[in-house]
Image (cartoon, rainbow over all chains, first blue to last red):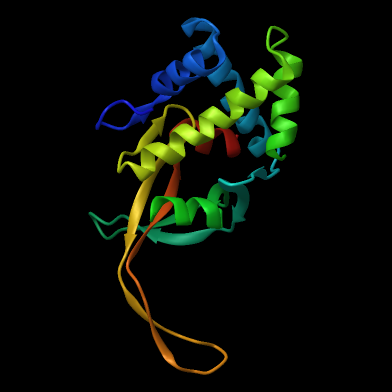
Length: 98
Length: 92
């Protein structure tokens, strides 16, 4: 189910869908892209994505703060921004340690 | 949005798929990521982000009820890092 030791990519997921669902490889790749765009759209609106047995993706807003260029030590302002955090479910956490 | 709602949307938008197939599609995506991590491999999804495991060292914990010290074993926790495209999308 994964690309053999070197980490998994979209193409590997599409290939698995091709095997499981029986759609063509091209269609499977398009469908993966569609699902990802769907998720991105939800997050862009600021809504959470909740996947039972996997985890929740939540959008959080962060205020302005001061940062430093680690190389030069120069102080720079970090603008307010929104970030996505992922909280794995208990099931997922147990699964990777089993 | 929950997984059930995502499945609903996929089956609306991809009319060639049955509801059941849309369900398998969505489950397969998350199962692939989960299994890949369990096998010790990371997953990199261009435009979205990457998933990998982070190691947590063993630590001393406490039973909040009795106050007794208990050892919390070392473990691995799933970690997601948003990709560049997703980060930019959120801040447009």
